[in-house]
Image (tube, rainbow, N blue to C red):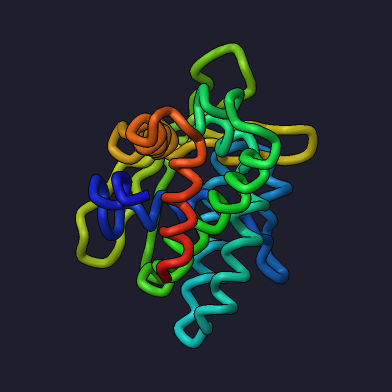
Length: 209
């Protein structure tokens, strides 16, 4: 995710990521049980800070917690297919399975360790809108960390059979999912249109901790 990282380094990206997690706090409100999209976003953001910004949390435990949060809070299969774009249909079953595994691992390795820097993160909901006829809801929020300037985030969520899921986050109008899709597509095109070219690149990134 180097393209995204270079576009919005530091607080902006970490805030966007922490918004896309969901784990109920002990004795507190559950993001999974939120009755509206705005409550879902604000609750899950605070849950993420509480769970992942603990100062004495080991890297291994933070990775484990983040992986669970990511899988619970994101519609991971939908995002992964979208990011791979038209190449999803081209990929074999074995390539799809490896891609999903590598995609998950890349996100965990890229973002998990950033949370120890964001225990001062704050956000407020600006608006909640339904942009079209489907089940998507856009929750616009303003996020800030310590002395850094505030950042506008648009969190796209979709309610499934039992809970909301985050399917994209836009930072100052730039979609993380679309940006990542463009990067992956470029890697595949440089590799002769083969999905294996992307898999090889992801293997290298995941292996280089």
